[in-house]
Amino acid sequence: MLLFDQLPPDFFLIFSRSNRYLYAKVVTEIYDQYFGVGFLYPGRRDLVLIIYNVLRANPELWTEDEDLLGLPEAVRKRGRRLSVSTEDSAQDKLLKQAQHVYRRLVDTGWLEEECVGLKVTVDMPPMALLVTERLVALRQGLAVAASGVVVAIRTALAAILTDARANAAGLRKAAENAQIFERSLRVVLADLRRVEKKVMDSESLEDRYRAFFEDFIGEVLLKDLEEIQGPNHPYRHRAEILRNVEAITLSDHVRDRVIEGYVDDRISADDRSAVEQLDNDLTILRAVFGHIDITLGHINRFRRKLERKLTNTIRYAEQGDRVVSRRMTTLIQRLDGIRARSEELGREATPVPGPRLDRPSYFGRATMAVPRRARVPLEAHPLERRRTDPAQALRRTMMRDFAQLFRVTPGQVLAYLERVMGGAPVLEARDVPISSLEEFLLVDELRRQCRAPSPSVARLYRFERAEGWRDDDWLRCANFRIHLRGPQTAQPADRTSTNPNTASLEVQDAP
Image 1 (tube, rainbow, N blue to C red):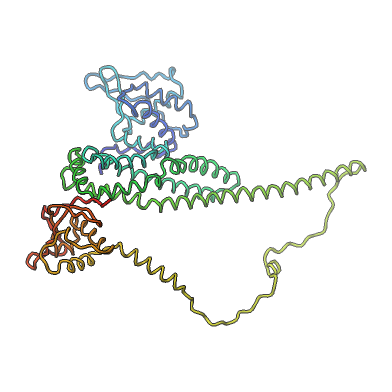
Image 2: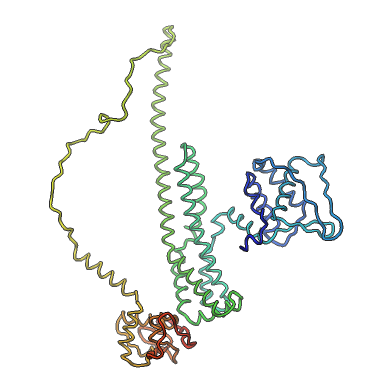
């Protein structure tokens, strides 16, 4: 794999021991100060100073007694080696630990040294930069990683409809942002599951309160859910995003300009790969925002469940504390009164032996609750068939028929073409009659068949461009011809026409 070809064998070894939190902190601090912004090439002493400050501010992160290593020898490209002074009298233990951490980062491939004359500069390899960027993204959390992606996607799609060729790269970026936003929603759902598991595994009431207020309220509610439910809420621009995706899908002119932009921007090598990339990007956007309600439903269900658990925990804890406190207060007052009376009478309080109590029985028939009334014996009754309301049955049938109306199958298309063509070899789109909603949906499906005909339709019919437009009260679209294939020109069912004249047609819905 490319990942392991580019990384040293011991690259992840620093995260396999007890000092992993220290190394993660050091790597992210070095990235933030020198390699996150700008082209800076720090020296060895600069990075040792950063590690020294991290150790001084977080001494608890050093949890393992490793064999301390000194600084590596700086090897010049030419000439002699540059030795490093390592006098123990000039270094304290913290500095030795900082030099040891720096040496480990160099040995495992997180840092690279280069000698320019007598100066040693340090750089971070590209693959180490990518891994560190992921660590920084995890540290920043969802609120930063997914901030504003929905607005960015909406803006990119609107720009495509304005100038598709110049803004083609924005569509590719919008698809990547949609995947990032989908992953961020999965992260929120995983955090809610983690908090619920931590609450259920809490051994004490204090641990349960800490899980609720620190993990659930502090991290999820105030950070992740607030970001999603605020300006970044997917439902805020969901309808507009799906409309723009559908407009790009149906407009052949826009699709052609986007394909040209993909090729110009080197996103795709040729027109064929650009078409595949465009379809893939539109599919991602349609899938993410078309099914976003499922993920949000899971998130809201977990949130409500945890809120109910928090409410019940607080209510029962208050009731238990109030009862126990009242009983303890009464007992202490009574004991204090007995001691006061004993002192007045000059007697020493001694324990009074009481009667021997039998061991209580926690299980058995006597401990079961007594029913309030006698149990009514079961009686046999004839089973009646459930009555169905005719109005409800008619409504369900109509709803099912209406939903089925918009699912146009290739078989319905073939039956419709056979009926309207009546054996004629050629028929133009502007001559196809439309007199009902069913026929309109069939003609609308023919538009899509022109761009990507199904195998069963392509075996019997061929589509090509034609002059003019079809413009009436039902539909406005570019005109096209439908040719009936003869027996000698019929294609197999698993192939489609490769005629360049069967390119997709520009379609505009009537206002």
